[in-house]
Amino acid sequence: MYVTGGGCILNSMKIHARTERLLLRNWTPDDVAPYAELVADPDVMRQIGNGKPRSRTYAEEFVAEQIRHQETRGWMRFVVEAAATGAFAGFCGFDDKTGRLDFGWRYEKAFWGKGYGFEAAAAALYVAQNAFGLTRITCQSVLNNPGSIRIMQKLGMSEIGIEMSSGETVVVYGFAEEWPEGL
Ligand SMILES: CC(C)(COP(=O)(O)OP(=O)(O)OC[C@H]1O[C@@H](n2cnc3c(N)ncnc32)[C@H](O)[C@@H]1OP(=O)(O)O)[C@@H](O)C(=O)NCCC(=O)NCCS
Image: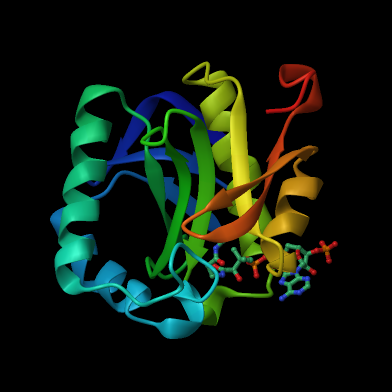
């Protein structure tokens, strides 16, 4: 994996990490269209928040928010792109809206089940810890999202609590040494 600290600029695009098959990069306004398509897919959104697909307006606001974060603090939910084709795959990265540092991921169906989720998560975690010095990172998932929970476990995280989120029971994962007493 190739990881940049200050950020590598390729065709004016800031790249945070390059893995065997993926790039983790900054957002551009051109990402609104593929991201709107992603969040309009009921299968993608079924195990997220209220489980409902989201609008184009939501996608526009989300991308604008990520661009604000990348311009100010540098980290956010990184775009994940297929290195070979440049296709938009989804996102993987960090958000602190809830007061905790949440690490999450979301991909188009064509990318599921091929190891991309873990590949991107391992790279994003490396960038977070080594380029941005982020700590006390947590992930959360509804109980019936085995792929997402498996990624957390493969990253070396363990269960640190169970709580309610958007009316759903969720499991929260973190690094046990950073959460010795759980949540
Ligand atoms: C959940 C998601 C990120 C998984 O991504 P992915 O690229 O398919 O995951 P990977 O291929 O890297 O697989 C990671 C591990 O999970 C396992 N896994 C993946 N999908 C699984 C499923 N549906 N059921 C059981 N295990 C699954 C894989 O076998 C692998 O484990 P292994 O290495 O021990 O075999 C992807 O399905 C997705 O974007 N879903 C929609 C959005 C979402 O739910 N986001 C997470 C919200 S918490």
